[in-house]
Length: 366
Ligand code: ADP
Image (cartoon, rainbow, N blue to C red):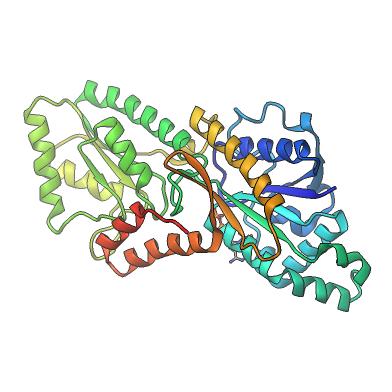
């Protein structure tokens, strides 16, 4: 019986539990054994109780729960070869030679590195007497399959990451709440949302709530934005709007890559427009809460596809990541997808914002 491990790693996102549930149940359905690796790569490195066989009923109720019930962590040990050696030993000890990892680009990069190193890790474990040749012989290849779990929707090559729509829903509802109080007092609000280097959450929330102005990293405002923003808001006020809302991505900056902060925008609105303005940083409420319909659906279909990808893999197959494009669940080359994602950050760092926008939209086919 094949043994398939499943773990969540990096920042948590709603829908990760749905992914774990689908991988566990599909593995069992396909006649495999399923193992949950608790606390991300920490569980792989430490082994013991952190690697646990999962049965059908162990994931009951997982679909609707927020966060990740099998835990996640940032694990420094896995960044080092000695940590990956321990992880390889734990996997061989438990007979696991396939891993489905739900996480962001960091976690998926680490996973592919582990796969590439796998033969040399086993060789070293035999040479140092930790394992015998007979013990490692059945485990010559490690299969890695990635699922993208992130609220930021920051992975190229996929239309949505698991968790982004749940987070967007929470942001919209929080902005609606702020609207009520803003309109009552005729106030301005600057609302900071998450997204790291990606403006998707800010941009979508801005469209969905009809905000007055938005700041995203991929398309910084033009020079003189301070006056432009104030003019727009003043015009809206003249038309009778009783509240002003500006949404700012946490990674916002100007065209020279100087950070633009929520407080800076607030001070402008206060000083230039004499507007009673407050800052609201939505913070971690954006990560929490139950998974919305879309994330339950996406994580379930992608979890099923991940197990199929494990069973289809040959030693020559490059690690896949499960994506969704135009409503179809697909497999893409994991490292190419990660490289494309990194090229967006590189374009921003090079101040090539047109390219950054274009890359975010790119239709990426293998
Ligand atoms: P995310 O997956 O959300 O991008 P991180 O970048 O923090 O989050 O990665 C999560 C974990 O994945 C790290 O703490 C580390 O254990 C592992 N990891 C990330 N990058 C690498 C890498 N290049 N090599 C090995 N492990 C890595």
